[in-house]
Image (cartoon, rainbow, N blue to C red):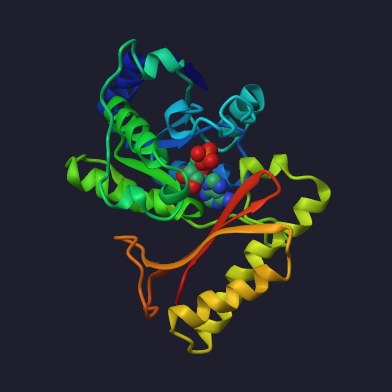
Length: 280
Ligand code: AMP
């Protein structure tokens, strides 16, 4: 497996792969890879002949008081995992390579970028859209793979690729969970043993919403209230949002329909966690 540090070299690798009749995939990540990332790389390798995994902790998607400086970094182990799942390339640029001195160009997906996580993390989706646009322009992949775990991110990036008329197909892979239900996240590493138990409330709330929806409950306010009660049983958790939205537009709905996104975010101690489900 090759490690590439510059955008010029990544672009050349992609063009060479396509010359050799290979379908090119990109899996954007911030590293600290776990089984969720592994599932994206495997899905990419299953349908594409040339898979690049990018590992870049993107400073512009972190707020000033967020965890950019301490975000977990484990480059050697990440490379081993990526290679084991079928990646041909790890793209690991410096911040200066992605944001040249004086960088002044950003992508704002208006409307969507102020919804869900964008509400409590102003500027987050601007940073995400900007870095993913740069990666897609550099790697020119046929397909880019993202996790449903970050469901609002998917909506923002789908809108962006349509608006910019990018040729890349966005592929979304299911949420990978621990055996007890907790959605895998690089930030789970921050949780103390007690917080790890409290964090299970998020997946409990998700399963509850799925069960209520499966039994025919469609009213958003009833589903949100049930979730709020379950969260209240764990007073150490601070709820950020509980929302039912149209997955494409991220606009609130009053009545759940097939494909409605039920999403939650909560603070467990100093760690903000998210989880979601697409209702049946
Ligand atoms: P990150 O490194 O956190 O930026 O995540 C990189 C990609 O992995 C994103 O598309 C995430 O949605 C995806 N991802 C993170 N956690 C999971 C998970 N538990 N299951 C599936 N995909 C995930």
